[in-house]
Amino acid sequence: MKLLTFRIIHREEVHFGTVIGNYAVPFAALQDLNGTEWPFLSAMDSYLRSLPDSERAARELYQSGLEQFSRIGPESVYRFEHIQILPPVAKPASLLDFGLSPRHLLNSGQTLLSREFRWPLKPLLRLLLARAYRRERYQAAFRYYKGNHQEISGDGDTLAWPPYTSFLDIEPELGIVIGHTGIDSSRSKPLIAGYLIFNDVSARDVQYDDFRSLCGPGISKDFHRSNGLGPFLVTPDEVGDPLSLAVTVRIGSRWIWEGSTSEYTAHPQEVIDYIGSVFTLPPGTVVGMGTIPYCCGLDRNQWIRPGDRVSITFDKLGTLTQHVPSEPSGLLPSRWGIREELIPFYQQHDSTTDTGRDET
Image (cartoon, rainbow, N blue to C red):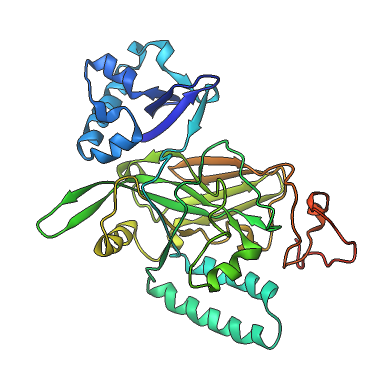
């Protein structure tokens, strides 16, 4: 099943429902059709807290909707162009992000080295980076940081462009959503409720300073609307093998980037089991697996621009479309140099200032 939270355009009421064919159908309408009253199907939060009972009930209603679609009132069936899809998990209980895609770490590390270091450090660091890639390619490194779970954006939203960055970037990731924690004889066991697309928006030219600090990612990751989630929460049975999903990213009409979840070095269940051995995951936690290689600007040294439309498509998960602000204001000079296409948006610009290197 594909589950979604949405509102009808120009209306305030929020609905929780499922996708039947090319329509969004609220669970409230399906319950009316079947004469049931399950409070845990009123919103995504209660659905996640009530697994697995809520999934069984939702699946019964979904199947009934498929079989009796013509009996659902036309006022309760919505085409996607008539609705605004909201983030599936609007207020995650927590947000964790892993780096289980070593090829992305290699690609991005090479770009960072080219912009942050010069000879004689650069050759040595390239050697260390290649050695780390070979090691982590065959042995998963379960390292994660905690993201800002209060700054969520969704499908159709316009992202923020912080004034302290000239190199805003996207990071398409496979996102895991945690449901109710089942109890076995020894400890709490996390339950994967489903998957979604996670866009970990990043400020790249301040990221090096963030990561070398003892505190981990800060202003490079945790700014306004910096964690995109959507468009659906897709249940594991519909996804099948989560490590075989093709990924396509479209940046306006300029670039098409392609990748795959097959690059991950661990299965989502291994990731969740690992976290569960450290602490109990509350329902509604979102976990990112890591950036899909070749699908972000830092991997390719290609950078989004003001006004770009970003579409991230994962096989079986749908497409998360988000917009880059057309007029970022008050940009500050970047440690990586001035980007020529951003000159109108800087607070002050000295024509003698170096432009960003290696623009493509």
